[in-house]
Length: 203
Image (cartoon, rainbow, N blue to C red; front, top):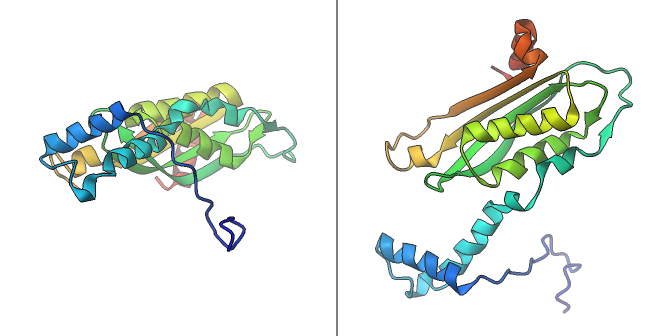
């Protein structure tokens, strides 16, 4: 039987990237520091797995999120109200402990003379989230990128996330969510517009 992915496989296997020895040694050092033996059977492949995982977690460094906003559309049938993409799930890692940040973002804009495919807003979010981050900067980066390249009349970005550096270590307080927001244009200047967009987001 052929190994071709056309035999009903739903996922095509990806080629494993080579992991430099010094990177694997760095992971082994952490394992030893934590109190385990990187040479025991269950951990033999862990250094390479961890390295490849981090290459995936941080793949946002290899892209420019603004490129997702390069293709816009002007024919929207006269539509000039709020465009909202709500509760976009994302994952990131905090730059202080490299612990997971897991949350959701809502992005809304009031179009000027152009709109963008809605999936592109999520791609901008993921492009910045897949880096070592703090939530405040992530919120600002997403907002600033969309504001600069889409030129909307108003823009609102709200992010809610749980930080494992707080929930799984340190103060050990699970279930806590952090909320950050950035309002620009009409949503910052006009209280009624701001309340409207926040209500649509569920706040």
